[in-house]
Image (cartoon, rainbow, N blue to C red):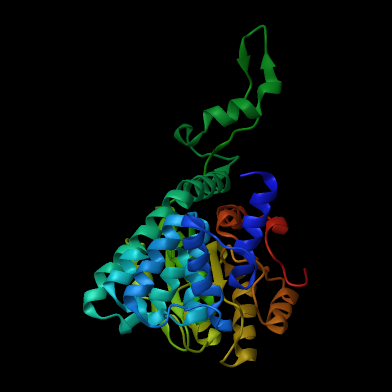
Length: 377
């Protein structure tokens, strides 16, 4: 196929059945799959209807003819455009789909509507996505956070020789090397400030589980499980809507954490913040991460006062408007501005940037928001 024919073929697939020209073989089947989804609203194609077998065939077709990234977009569009959510209650549907974060969000939003025969298939889908996210994010998170904890735990006044970090001490005193004696004079010691407590920081992660926060809930659950695996951190995980669910005891298994959430419903940020205040035992060593679009259904002024009280007590409060790859989120600009005026960092963060954010918080340094979406940008 020459360049001109290839351009015509691509335009024909883009424009759909209303365009001139015919397609054959695999191109015709690709066109039919696109038509079923994107032409259905204009009634130019047959659509997918409510037929489970037809949807299963369509899911198989798009997996055959399109790359995984495109398949995930088409599945998400199918759920939104054609209201296929209820078909995901069928085990055969779940076995045919391409697992991704958006699909996990949809399954979590179905919650108790999942019939018994579909629950194992749903868990398998969620487990697959969680494993992929853990493989992508765990090492980077552990490396960044462990390094930050190590750096923040150093002291220049070690009490015993066993507490001296000799490698760093030598590097810090290379200028004091005496060639005639072939030795370094350690005028400045660098040591480990391990103290009496194994836990160096407390992390309280509160996640808004309203419907618009689905992807953020998935990523937050995985990150919370990773952080909870670190002995130097005491990690709490709280999911909230108008009620509060403390899922800390499930952090050993992020799949169980996600199935403990209940996506959808209203939002009472004030109630969640009040609960999290009671979890803080060492304010100066606590990082409070609030993941929310800040659309408050509860008493706004109380919520702002509570956060102001936490920051005044020494808690590091960080508000993430989203924790996802979905781009600039929708959020309440007034509440974001009010929190920013208190000195609380407010921005959306990608999953890849989250380890750096945690490292910066542990070291109490300003986080570079160059790769996040701050209010007003």
